[in-house]
Amino acid sequence: MQGTMGKQAVEWLAAAATDPRSCKRQWDQGADAVLLEAGRLWDVLSVPEQLGLSALAHLRRARRRASGPVLVNCGARRVGFFLRPDPAGEWIGPGVRHVGRGSWVAVPPPHRCAGWRLEWLLPPDGTGALYDPGVMELALREADGACAALARVSRS
Image (tube, rainbow, N blue to C red; front, top):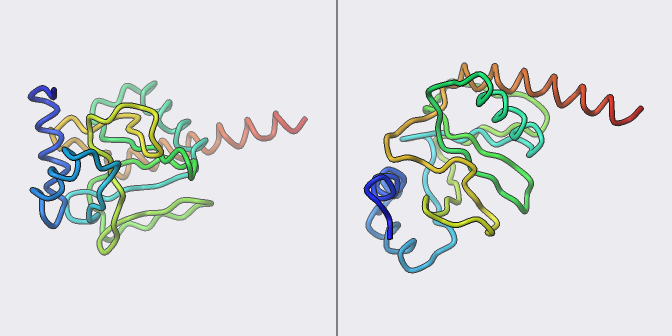
């Protein structure tokens, strides 16, 4: 049974669907994920797993108050950060993909237990909290330096 916060998270995520009722019904019936439109309520910045996990660690260490949902695709080994929509934003980097208007994202229900292909590292809390693109860029730059340093050390 979901609490109030879980219901708010479901409502918030389902609001991105073309048909929010159908989205919620699919999740209630056990759908692993539904396709939701990016670019209206949120964008997703998808990065390689190592970079994403390192960036998330930087964000947590910096004790950033504002955070957003973070999704991991275990099969593709990618991490997706939910950002405020940024139609003019350009993200450039190896393996970095910005998913915005005109794109769709497979999203599991926010109350899903671990063990699936798509898992929430940080599920939505229903408040609409999203990562700020500027804060995310800084965390990725810091993480990229850390990942590059780890890669250099591991080759020695």
